[in-house]
Structures are given as structure tokens and as C-alpha cells.
Length: 408
Figure 1 (tube, rainbow, N blue to C red):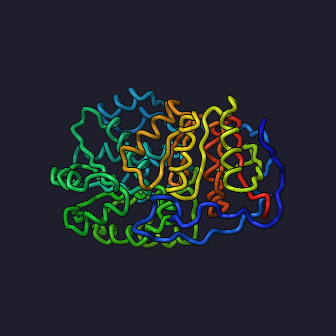
Figure 2: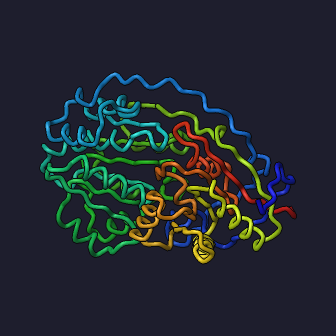
Figure 3: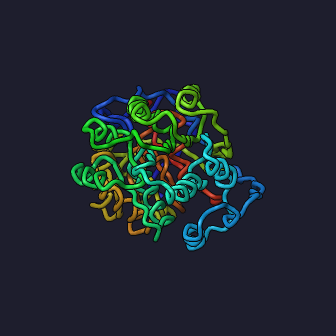
């Protein structure tokens, strides 16, 4: 193969090739700068894959038919092929049905969306005040996924949702809100824009869901979330989902929730079963050449490439297309429909490569990614773990490569 792959690397940090863009490409608001990039020793990007130990399958104490859901909802659950709940569903649904506040600690891809949607849908049939449910998610993609699932589970039940996210026409969203949907699903920035315009009224809300709360804090959304919570009644049910419990999250849960039940089904985010290596390159041109050679190899079937800035990601995707490697890009300068289209092309294997900023690193369930390539090094080691966690899922093997500067 036409590239050199070396292990280890020298101790000083990889050069930052794409400087100037804000972190995450489209997560936070305005031109907010993210935290400064932390030095990560190149040795942390190297790991011989360890065979994933077979975890004992979760023994659910309920079937979906055991939950006190109406016939229509049970029919929709059955139509989706759901029989036995996952751990987060099995343990949190009974508490949510009882109206308790719940802190759900669960990894992405464990079925937490259905865990909160199903009891919410069931309760909507008896509620006259609309809208009564606010679901807040960190990214447009995750909000869209929640909305899609809501529609599938509530089919034929005359329940309506509205998606309130950035990157799409605000006038249409204002019209949708005037129709008084049962459920509002959105991202913190756009929800606050509409709250400020007094189009979004939260005073009659009965239920608040904060999904991937840790990610929302990482993206600088805490002030936005606080404003949304302050506009809601104190008497409400709050459902709080997060992959981690940090001191900041602990403070949030104490101020937002009332005597919550904690349901923890979190497994450690491990990257040990992902084969990881560094690739040393001399300069930007060499880096692009090496990447192009790698992606020309048939072993690279479905590849997620991470870049640091919106501009850099788009330019890299355009370059790959020009040299005959079909790719799509996801970053903050894409509007919602463009991002959805790029994601669908990658999921459906119409393109071999998805080039993304960290906006795609969490919350998206993309199956069967064969390789993750860090074209630009991540901001933090935690971001690195999230990035490479897109491959090697469900017991499959995965590979991750990180480019570092050979002159460092």
C-alpha cells in the first residue's frame, strides 16, 4: 500500500492543520469559541484490539405487552417489531408511567428514545392542554431522529409533533407552533429564539425531556436550557438522560428535578475492542495523499472521517469526490435537509465516506462503520473516544486511524 504507517509517534503534539473554525462545527450558538485544544499524547491513539468479552444478555423483567399501554400504541410497538424492552426501557418505563422524575444514565444506541416516548405518547391521549411536552436534544440530527420515532409510535393516534431546530425556515416553525402540537422537539438555540419572540409558550407544559444532557453542556447550551426551564411550570415531570454524571450534571439534576429515580444501565465507553493506530504525515498535501490512497483500498468499506472545521470538512469532501471517492459532508454550515441527505446517503451506502465535524460524533446511530479516520486530531481525549465509538459496535470489529505530524 502506498502509505507509511508507524506506531507510537513522538511525544510532542500533532500540529493543528485546520485552525480558526469553532469547535464542533455547528453545535453552539453564534461565533462562540470552544475550549482550547488539549494536548493528547500520540500513544493514546494506539491500541491493539482486545476481543470484546461477551456480555451476559440483559434479562428483562417485562415484555412490552406487560406495560399498561392502550391498544393503538401496543399495535404500533408490535408493528416496529419490539417485543422485549432493552435495559433502559425495562427499568425506566414503569417509573415514567407513575409520573416520577427520572435520571436515565445510558449510552447512545440503547433504546432510550423509546423509553421516554412510549409513556409520553400513552399519557397524551388524556391531555387537553397542548402543547404539553418539550423534548430538548443537542443536535438537529438527534431531534430529527426523536421526531421520526414519535411519528412511528403514535401512528393513527391523532397526536402531532413539531420539530424546532436551526438551519430551517423559522416562519414555518412559527406556523407549526400556532397549530398547537402535542409535543415540541427541538434544539436549545432555536427553541430560545422562539421563546424570545413569544411564539413558544411553555407555561402549560407537563413534561420536560432533556436528552444527552452531557452533550448539551459540552456544547455551551447551559444558559439556553436554564431559560427554557425557567419558562416552564415548577409542577412538571422531568426526564433527564445522559451518558455520564459529571459534577455539572449533578448540580443540574438537583435544580431541575424533584426527588428523581436514578436508572443506570450505562456500560463503560470503551475503545479497547477497536484497533487503533497513528499515521505520520509530513504536511497537509501528504496527509491528503495518504488519505486518498487509504480510501482507494476496498477494505475501507464505510468510513467516517473527522475534521476540525466546517470549511476544512467541506473542502476535504469535495476533494474526495473530485478524485472519484464518493463522499458526503456533515457540518454546521449545512442546513437540516442537506445534513439529513448526507446522513442517509452514508447509511444507505450510496457514498463510501462521510466527512464530519464533531457534530456527528454523538447521538447518531450509524451502523456498520468499518473505519474511523481522525484527519484532524480531536479537541479532547473524551471526544476521541466518542469519535471512534462509531465503529466496532455490537461486537463487530472496528479500526481507527489518527493522523499526526511526523515533524512534531
